Length: 395
Image (cartoon, rainbow, N blue to C red; front, top):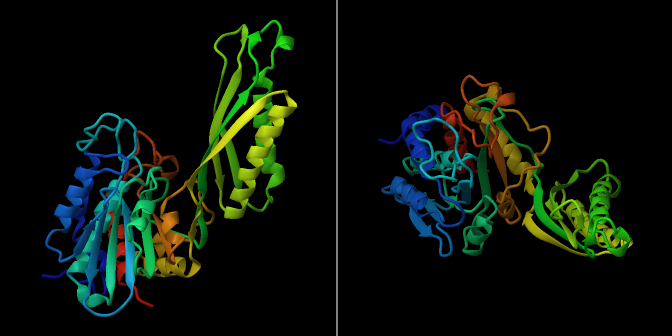
């Protein structure tokens, strides 16, 4: 018998709580990294079996694209759930703890997959509730592997009219949904700078070209670049997170190395900081008699929600989970997301779902990417319901 989506989509989603939690725990204890996630892919395919979907598997990754066709003309709405874990040792004492050393679902992708599968079950049993198609995008490689780009190159966005995603977030009340139009999350690029001098005895710096003062001045210059090179009403961040030079106390090293991250909420600011970093690195090194190599390794672009689709998500969330469980996100986050690639091609929006564990003040919850991250499973139904509502929505 089909689950009744009618007036109470949330109750329909709650009816699948046991399935949602079971799949989430099975994925959690068997985390996989990167673009090749065969065990996770198998679990997804087993869960979708019998739902009458047209399924396409990735060529270069273990992605899963599942189309649910109503049989009637209409738009194609994409719903995305990412699949991969993090290279992190889990230190939680739970029955479904990761069974693999050095691997953990510490960003909630296990919840994303399970919520999206349950939404697929609801929608497959209620194809009379929408026209057109719903495309379920199960994506590997979100954690730095550009998995969305692989799927886009393989055609996941072909014919798609709108795209939506949900990301769980522990420092937020359980079941609370939020989003905003415009910049939602930051771009994230990595940089490496090597300053080359001439090594020698630390007692005779005049016989050397010391790269360490040049490195110190470079750090200061990069920080000044942000404070003086970016419009104060816009956001930009350069963090030098790793510096390495020398081997002992009485040797001036021949070179100094540093690396870090560049984060922005605007692609023009991103370009400004890229150009500025190379300028500061090169000229500061020259001013100290050194030479320099610098490299910027592009990461994810700014995640920009389309305003109209963000408004749709807000309206749907208020309707499905109630006014008390929705509020507009007051400011963007400086984390990064490769759903940004999807939003560069089609209108859409990402929302956050609070999953603070029971008995914990959400201000003090172990955050995403923590070795102690845990989530509440009580209101994953809010995510299931929102996924389903986004899939069913038609202008």
